Amino acid sequence: MKRLRELLHNKPLMNTIKIVLAVALLIVVCRMVDWHEVMQLLTRMNWWWFVLAVMLQWIVIAIGNHRLQILLRAQGVHLSYLLTLKYNCIGYFFNLAFPGGTGGDVVKAFYVVRETHHKKTECVTVILLDRVMGLIAVVLIAAGALVATLKLSPTFRPLLPLVLVLLLLSLGGAALVLTKDYWKRYAWWRAVELRTPPLVRRMLNALHQYRTHKATALIALGESVVLQLIMCFVAWCFGLGLGFSMRWYLYFIIFPILTLIITIPITPSGLGITEVFSALCFTKTGEGKDAGVAFMLLLRLLMLNMALVGFVYWIMPGTHVKREELAAAGASIAAEDEPAAEEQAP
Image (cartoon, rainbow, N blue to C red):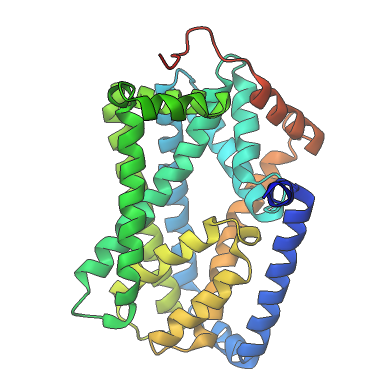
């Protein structure tokens, strides 16, 4: 068990494993599809639908940017909309360019923390909460679409129990954090708190503060649902452009699941595994595995659009940051002593 923990904490080794797995899966994809057919789909595509998808994507970015801004404001961190947008775009770039190393969320947290030296833990917590709210919205949409289409489309019905479990776990975790003062009266909760690392306790305390900012939390969750719904319409635009005949509501099932897979750090940015899953999903809808890979190529192109803007921001004077600085900042946050005012388990 000790040896296993050492392997899991060996970042270079884990990153190498992820890259090898991604390459292996991409080889599988290359062998399972007809690339001539994939290129035919892209050649015949009506690219005006992709232009519309790009426009919708920037609406999504604008909403997500406001979500991060109000979540930070609730923790006493006030950033302008344009500065928040700048750091968000840099995060998109690092998500795509260096997903196996620092990652976009870590880089985004670094820049936000740099704006305030007395709210390090709170800033990191908000960045994580921003991501988690997006995932909760994805699960909500997938669960809602699966329930609403049980009779219309039985194809993805087997996924419903898993999606509902994820939804219950997400809501249950949020409820536990928001009501932690109630559970402190029980010995088992105090025992868990004593064994929880100080950094994690500080992060949970920062999340707990949102019980006094209920309106902010609800607005942020609502914005998360709206932007994920718009992304489902983006997926629908891809399908219309490629000439797919599948029903529109299937995009509200397939795209949220693809989003979850991209987020799970099994491979860098879900590379390989997302392509395989997309091929399988579109095969089940009758469009075929070639259509699934063409769809993912468009999605990767859309992600590149966000990353390029982030790259331009990143190379600006005064913004560029080295890997060593990121590592030092992470170590500083992890080693930060607990504030004297923090609650202690009685």
